[in-house]
Picture 1 (spheres, rainbow, N blue to C red):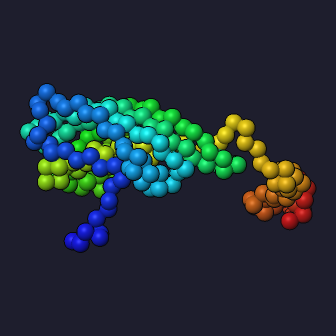
Picture 2: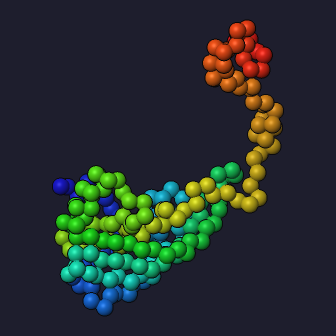
Picture 3: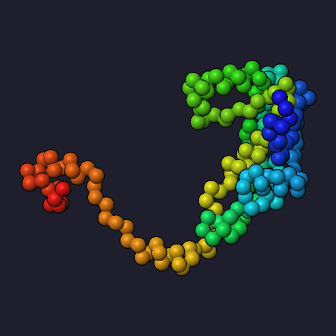
Length: 196
């Protein structure tokens, strides 16, 4: 496979499962300004000025799975859906991630194809050749925490658009099933007395 086909992660922090101590490993992952700029572009937002993940990595089953628990904090700005002005958002959320070795991850994928992804369980990430990327998973967590409809408190539609919205009355919609009601009326009218 050529290197051109590999996806470059904007916030990559790779760990080797076998090097994590049995007591666990506490890490603080901090995005650089270059990584924040790359995350801004990837997420399609106005800015990501900071991203910090305070995490504990715990290995189990002889390195076949790794649990990652902690908290992510980020400062981001998105465009308001009404005015396109910046909307600041402070993210401070707990995270819980599960990484599985290749055989367990493949088994999970096969089971998910048959039964669908379980809604109440965490979806695992792969450990490939003993290595797993916590930063890439944190990027996904950050994306899920973004407000899907960011709106400033003072945002209003411009007067020209407000006038258009208020001036255009919605056309009266006729019930699409009204024609079925005429089957029971000998005069061919619907329940409101309208001819059909």
